[in-house]
Image 1 (cartoon, rainbow, N blue to C red):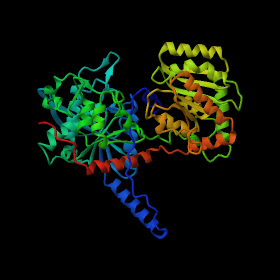
Image 2 (cartoon, rainbow, N blue to C red):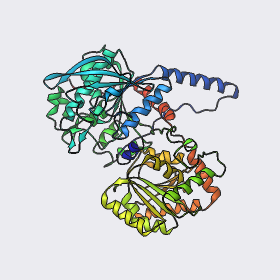
Image 3 (cartoon, rainbow, N blue to C red):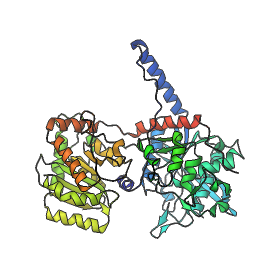
Image 4 (cartoon, helix red, strand yellow):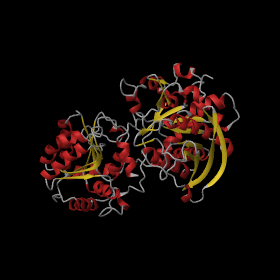
Length: 544
């Protein structure tokens, strides 16, 4: 899981919060309990009647390349635990050892259009815990390949592979006798699904299960847009009119699968609150600002959840002693801090704050800014632990500082999950100086471990972190305002100022640990979004 979180640190994962608001009025004391109980009952009934088909290129634990794998595993699981019928469709990639999947069975076969011929997909059923998974097995397209590409770059036939996969998923619904309320399509690899649904089912097979579903298009990585030459449209059997039209597939002169999903889905979803406003601004939406402005009423977003069973400091076997937000003086966290200082050969001052950073050694995650400001930070009596991988030159620059400031700095080359738990449990600050990175589960994990994030105000991480400088009573971290080394140093100074007051610091740490970014809460918000999907008409008809 942690590997996926780190990879997510380098993606442009964009979002906007949405919720259905009630009347909010105060109810009479005698009637409130009854009405609340009725509302809860209706909510449970709505979830229990809900059927969702997730369409994804990755799934934890079968294929893990990006944060998509965890998302596609955790959200369906949370929905199933709440009573929904959530099922996952994924290509049967070559790296999946199907012989080791207990209970795997072949459920049927579909043949789908594939350029000038047809391609066969076997439907393989497997249970991942409580979640039904369907592996769409194609010898032609997926048996010998991974989800995206090789060391030489993306596969040249990705457009053909995922067009065939999209058709296979839609056709499989009838074979499986599964009529979902919502097709939850994840990123560009499933971007054609809403368009093909319109062209080949709504318009031609209105009684097919695929024709009756609404669609929710999930944008986890806006920067990866699935762009191909427009000549592929004819080969895929999609009328060229869908390229040129307003609201078509044209993005910079190429066919964009991501844009297809954004144009034709019933509702769009991204993954951190408030960010939909930003991606509508010039140069913030990766060329799709006009699409997001035009579809702003259908653009929603929900903070992604955290698996608190895997990341729970009160029950974490990897750390020196468990602790929780209820601890009076956080004695367990103090022992974890000493354990971290011992493991990393740091000076062991009990009142010396430790600042950690976990991510990729590159400019996107802000390691260049850290390298520029590191000397000044350590001169402020702050110990620093840096963990990640990436640019060798940046790593060597940081390693030089480690040898210069023995006992004050430690640089860990590589991602080691067990050590990551130790680092988070023992640290006081988490440096997150990315210039532009909304939506990061690592931030939410740090809060649960009582680590105070220091983030750039314009990064989008304000969806997770309230600035304690502006709001001392509700704040959960520090925003630095200017994206420079001096700006980051000012953020560290603000955190140090709070740290120097033990009473205020304990209150801040406790407040951080009480934040709820659980998948249960996330699933409740997605259920509200799905209700909108089932109520709304589809945005437009594709040109047949």
